[in-house]
Image (cartoon, rainbow, N blue to C red; front, side):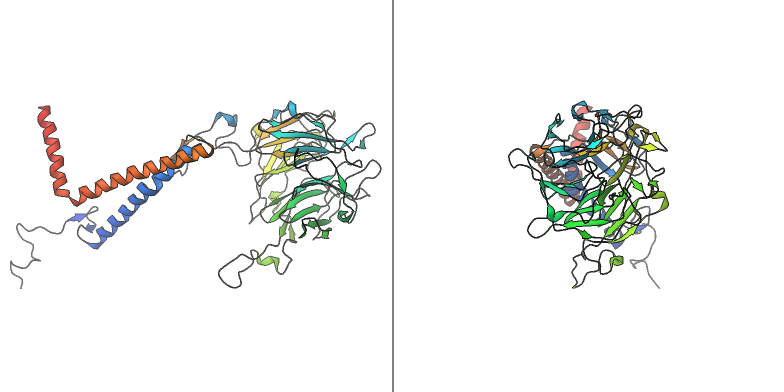
Length: 504
């Protein structure tokens, strides 16, 4: 039997253990100690990690995320987006504008656009009546202000139209194309920019790099170790399924073309782009006319480097396929195809997104612009359109050429809705800005100073260091006050008491 001296006895005047956190935990127990340790760890991370990090980005970035901005309720976008939905859909283009300084000197029909170093070239094309391939090459310089006026460049040794072009390993390549006497050729010309002027002053025919067969209107894309040519028309003017690759050799020159797995269907005048570890082919013509299906070719990649002696391959489906080859073609889901086939559309890719602009639908010129962003797991699943990203109402283009220069895409040449040839140029920005202010459930986005260059970076470091130092001093003061709680309370009480006395 317990007496009154038992420390566990609860009687008059006795006090039980102090409870905290709505009575859930003992104030002197391990549970509350654990909660406090977690809270203090989070405070330390916030004061000495998160806040200095935000101070840096508040200096160098145009916007800064504070907290976790989930389910944003308020969005305010910059005026530069010119009325696009806020936030702008991924891939949307800032409305097109006329770029008169980029107007081509000729008709701008059936030629090929290529950026090579600090210059843009419009290579070949057709002119006259009847229209015949030409040797003409126009060149414009790139500078901070954009594209300069076009000037006559070094002509090709032979006339070419609908040639494939690529800039790889410091050299420009003109691949195949139609001549003034043949619907398709197998020749390959190379031009090397001058080290002083950056201009291509000579075109050399590479007999060792001649295509296995004549091609015109082939899709060309650059991969990490070479150039890939897909489809195109032969001398019979029929779309083909051939896929060839010229690999960069150890001597720095391209090796002869090797045959890859063929396209699942014939394709000509299409576009091709490398996105991730896959080559996408879209647009153009199939054997039955304008094509809607988007084709995806998966490339065999090297096994990932792991800690074990044998790391698994990235995709087990590639089996023992040679690294760098296409081991599978997949048409992808039905909803990933173009909603409607188009003839003569401008095709390009930017920021991992595929674009289709203009062309004709059932013989009628259109100004609509579509885009799709492929993902590794599913490929292309849908095409998006925003009215403000369409070509101007009076700017429908058929057979135009396109080139991406920095954060802009240029659309040049082609024919207007009436069928008249137009050398005019249109320009659109490919990267709408993110909202400058957002309010979400657990955070917000605020404007930053956006100080650019090394000066901005150094000021950002100073801001982060200043925030860290201030927070460290505050935490040090809090630690001293907590360690001397009784004296701190007395000091605060004395200060408050004196203020109260002076007030009376």
